[in-house]
Length: 270
Image (cartoon, rainbow, N blue to C red):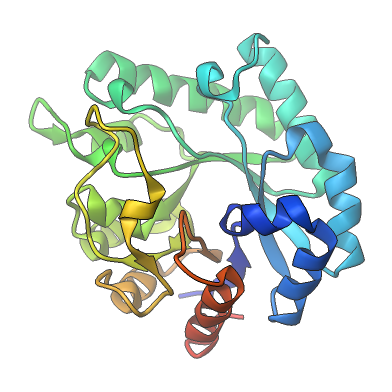
């Protein structure tokens, strides 16, 4: 069993980053963070790398939409998208590039699930040429469908090349109706990163016709909600990163992050 390293998905602090990036990153460093997970990095990799470096922060994982051009709103081919994404990742010093969201409609049919897995496998092969890995980050929509008696997410994982990593968002897996501890034990070493997130366990909001409102998630600092984080962390014995994230936080985001850092540091994750 290895001890994961502490990190923060910078999306958690997106509002304050927009108004004061330098001050925000300085504050995060003061809270004890040394690793962060970046998002929206492809268009500004050099600038972001320089800014992180000024505050003693490193990024070894990052989120980029390369499986769903409709989300990324780009007209490049798949190969062009991968080339730009991986070149930017190299510039930042990332180890793993993670696609954070494939829309709900693509998890209801076996053919679409197979296509998503195939694209990830192709991306993994291309990433290897850059010395990188790729991964997938779940929400809840991946878990709510069954295909011929198999859960959609399990079917997806069964089609993935072993080179593809999984980043399990514990909160969203619980919202998808999964026993997250059993899930993590079953996935074993496939899980290289965790999103440590807490709150009330809600129903999957992504497969409905109602627009997703992050404010309805009721997210709180890790250890203060209903998600069994302690047991989940113990079950993910091969995870390299424990990454704090808030989709929404009703309060001072720095206080929420500080509480998350404290929660994980008490468990030896620093």
